[in-house]
Image (cartoon, rainbow, N blue to C red):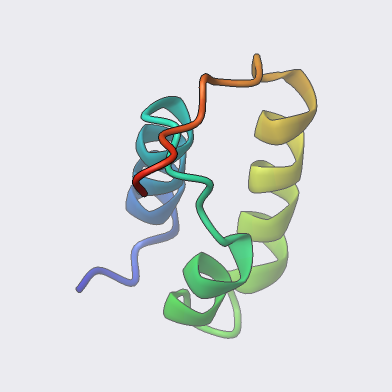
Amino acid sequence: MTTDPDRLLSEFIDAWNAGRRPDAGSYLERAGPEAQADLADSIAAFVTWAPTPDYDHDA
């Protein structure tokens, strides 16, 4: 399991676009303490501008 903030953001975006309703907190927990604030900002910026996907009701 990766702790790289760029990879975590990419995984979050992939899950979002697939309609899986990813939990941002679980991605932040995987990042090191020094990277959590920046990752939170990146996730918030993405969610602000990203189109709402068709959610996968089975996910």
